Length: 197
Length: 276
Image 1 (tube, each protein chain N blue to C red):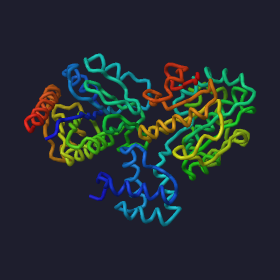
Image 2: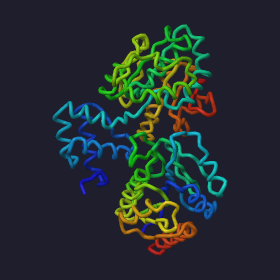
Image 3: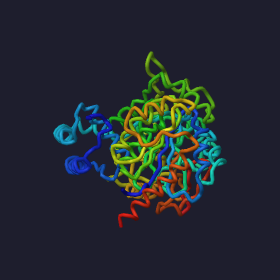
Image 4: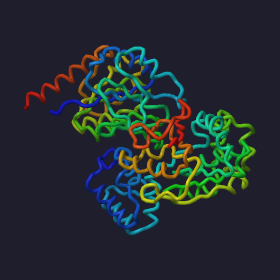
């Protein structure tokens, strides 16, 4: 197996709290870039990046077009843009909303699957929407890892349930467990790669 | 499968784009692949086809199918006074600079269906500069340029546009600038008279004038790094010294060859001034 190269995260209703919990469990040594779609209002002046930055030693920024992806950096989809991943960089799009959402989680996940194949870990968090389910299935189909917040412990269970129904996902976890599984998965895949050589 | 999550065959896509260059001279090969794939999948759905070779056959045989293809690739999502803070900053910080010129040339590159062109026309009108301005509004997509030329927008959007207009420092009421029927808002003739609409391809056409302002907002997000660099140097060559370059809210000149020639005029907006 190839090493993990990027983590993509989708969150909707209740997502701020969930994202704060996960990001606070990661340190500045975290080896991968993390791209996040949190459903949000059109208004570009909200405080999402600032709020998340307060809870983590990773560097949080709102993605700009062509931003290079760096380890231990968090790239937030900006309000009213889709965020897509190309190999090594972010790209933005104003194509119409998908699942009534722009940014859409499916758009992020599908582009990550196309660009990184089995190097993707996708994380579906709380939300009252089915966004992310199709993208999670795409990540699985391309050999990536999918991790879903336990719907019984989610502020809003619909989005985790939809993701679980969409494909054979790898992990169903409580919020507090997610960061350590992320860290372990990086090590495991890295270890596999070294073992092969 | 057959739905839009199906992966496109990259070789077939490459072949389609190469055939289009040869047949029509439009080059989409350096578009950013991630969004390109989504657009092509959407086109397949609209054309009710389920594979690229069939699409290729249709597009090569039928120029009107090709025109629809161009329209489908060009993401024509736009609105009047999109990002009101941008227009407010332009009004406050750029208009006073423009006021010093006897004649003002503005290029809106990638004007889509024209919403931002009319926004700029209104801004110039309110600042008393419209009479000595000319706006060149261009797009790759002939269908969009035609729509832009008509100056007709859905009435249903006017409430949103009106709010944007006021947030952009509008001095009047947006409704003064159009006449409405049941479905549409038709923008007034005096706003159109100094606008030149034309089809122009940023990928292969060259610079056609020297401008005091170039607006190219949310266009290069669909290009890969190579094409972005090419277009930025084309825009650079089209600007006078001390001319103003405006990009989309989430674009920048970072990592580009022309970055060092510009200063960002306002910290919070992507409004740049060419210094050398």
